[in-house]
Length: 258
Ligand code: PGA
Image (cartoon, rainbow, N blue to C red; front, side, top):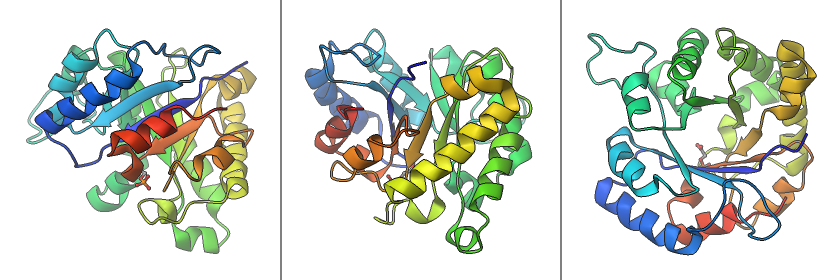
């Protein structure tokens, strides 16, 4: 089965509504007619923007009807309630949001999210019709201790344990030591981790699940290292932080050839 090649921008806590609109208008001026899947005639992949929650309204207005997707970077797992400062998956869905990131390492490390919460978020998003992108990845200490496989397998298994079997999701492998550091995983290191994750997906849901679920690589992806990464058999796309903040560099990544 041919999986789509997915290029996702993670804007983190950058860009307010006006900057987001100006950026997307420029991006769209280069990409308006792009279909959401790889095709021979245009050289673009499935592209999406994961934006600060406060930008979601304007981003959804700007991207609706185009081939480009959008999503939040986090959500709460309850639909509503006394959760000051949180964003409801139901409200995110009201903006017809197709995707949302879950379990980014910054959420895990800085905001104390654990696998239990992440599993509930995956389920909550699927329940309102949003496709979650579940992030997993080891720290440098875990890699040096030879624990990479165990860590990412467990994060994947735990994060998916409440999922709805019939609904799609994506996985992003982001080694923590490669995020925002300029230190990209070697194509072999990344591919090995993706193989481990694909095998675990097979274990969790059989071959069809393993073959149809895109596994993206994230961590210092830039136009000058993307070709080598994309050439790896198990890499089905990129989750891009720093290099997604400028239209030029993200457009170059969105046009990655697989
Ligand atoms: P980076 O971030 O591309 O700046 O390393 C990736 C991410 O955190 O998703």
